[in-house]
Image (cartoon, rainbow, N blue to C red; front, side, top):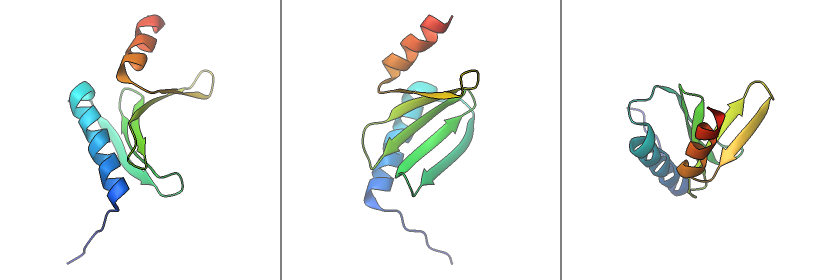
Length: 89
């Protein structure tokens, strides 16, 4: 039997990321779930190009990578992300 241990802040971050997914993106395809041990970020990369992330159990951030400009845009709230989407159309 293989055992896995998750640190407290990693577990807290995962719960926040999954809650944001449930509240705003339920049903959206999940491309990858992960943890970056170098940055402390836990994340869900979604099929719509959005990544939901939390570092060290802090509030979630919503990250979009813009392939045209080769830049990441980070939003502190879903409302900021939503306003960005509205202004893009």
